[in-house]
Length: 408
Ligand code: ASP
Ligand code: MG
Image 1 (cartoon, protein in one colour):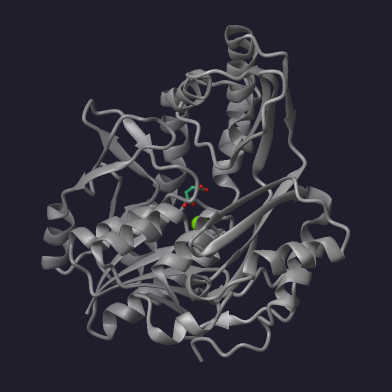
Image 2: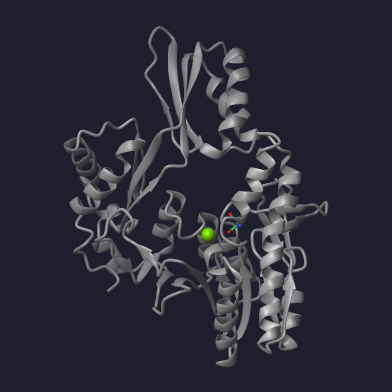
């Protein structure tokens, strides 16, 4: 088999752990497989680099941030290749550029445009294990780019698609995808399989197991993707196309996201073009808006609330300062201590009353809902951050996630 193995930050967090990864890769190789490895930076390293820059300024140049952050993964590819060579397994480290990953030029969250897998395939042909730096690529203009936080997953999937790997294993510090965060709910259950569609919702809603764009990419190119533990043997969770059994379960998972911030613009003139102006400006700054709510207008003034990633809060603040003036709104407010709690399941397509049940459950705990958004297979509520754990625990119980038998 041709297997891509991706190891996350905790899996390569020390020299000892890098040697453990080398041993696992060597084992897979000695069993007769071809292996391509993708690694993250050592755990905490990317955060450390970000904070170094932030000691200088809150708004560092994004091009230079990419040069800085891409260095984390260069360290781990070199060390892992050295460790593999030391075990007698020829290996070679490749940066994103050397691995043929070409992106657009949107720094700090570049999108992959194409992958030229030739060098990687060439290495494999010579019996060499390619060890590829996750999270990075090169723009047409030859600048180093990064793919957004957690982007090594995407690198692994994109490489797997390009070289037509049989399997892409994401090795991490958990042994699969759970019905919710086991740190909050001890009864959380591991799923043996989950549909791409559900995983995509879970991932983009804040379940940190897989980066959401990697799931999107895997679904699009049909990459067989599996989440497995680096530290424990097990079959992990396999991502698949939706099947009949999955529809029977109304809710597959409960998730939360504490990395959003809420913006409210008060006293917005209610006339055509205003929303386009606000969200056009935000989009031009490459800030991804999630939920949007516009209230009913009173005396031709309205309020608009929306959420943005908390990491974009400084940029958003700058934009809000000028845009509120420009559109003649009264004022704006930023609120950071919010959380988005969501339930996800393909079964929602064919069951009714799911939203009502969710609201009733939250109300029963006295939790106020500030914003709501829904899709075909998920319902999300923004609540006060301090109730996150209570909400997750209560919903997990109310939707009987401990007892369902999905995927088993
Ligand atoms: N090192 C990057 C991060 O911490 C990319 C990754 O680990 O996937 O976000
Ligand atoms: Mg990750």
